[in-house]
Amino acid sequence: MIKSTFHIAKMDCPSEETLIRMKLDGLSMIKGLVFDIENRKLSVFHSEKNEEIGNRLKELKLGAELQETIIVKQDEFIDNPSVQSKLLWIVLIINFAFFILEITTGFISKSMGLVADSLDMLADALVYGLSLWAVGSTVLRKKKVAKLSGYFQLALALLGLSEVIRRFISFEEVPDFQTMIIVSALALIANSVCLYLLQKSKSQEAHMKATMIFTSNDIIINTGVIAAGVLVLLTQSKYPDLIIGSIVFLIVVKGAFRILKLGK
Image (tube, rainbow, N blue to C red; front, side, top):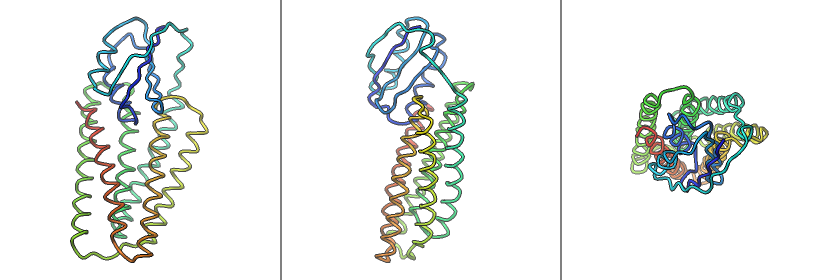
């Protein structure tokens, strides 16, 4: 068994990981991939030397550089997809459930911060879903789903931004700060539980580390919406909510473009 280690300079989330998996799909010599997103490293386990692996990675323009190629024992590559899948399903379901909760309460309470946070939850759920569904699926089908998901997410984010702009320049009621704080606090607790479960698993696998990064980002966003709710209470102004909503919508737009890369 051969182990080739690459440094991927621009690999920092599940979108790039899924992009790489799809790009390398179909190379029969590859026996396994191990991602270390925190350190931006990819270990490719393969049965024979083949320059096509490096060539395909470079085509992605993510700054892939081969660091070393060594011979390893067969048992050095351990894959446990069942454990990964269970944890990813848990996080996916929680993210999608809170997408429904936050987008509903966001419109009811007139909070763009909650609406934006809900779309960030949806973005995460889409990425996790793509990662889970990638197993056993054809490259063409993966790309079609990636395109549809990316365009859907981008459309929602742009609609959200246009609504934020409309609310900035028109008279709008002050959002319900109580709903903002309570719902965001629930989302914060849910994401904290997810992060605890992921860290408790002590998994070094790609999707698990990527999910930890995404969940940590969600906790920061949840905290931001709570802070915006407190500022709405103190200032009796709509602007803290609109500002945090704009920031989160821009994060969602960035995520949408990352997903669209998967469809190329």
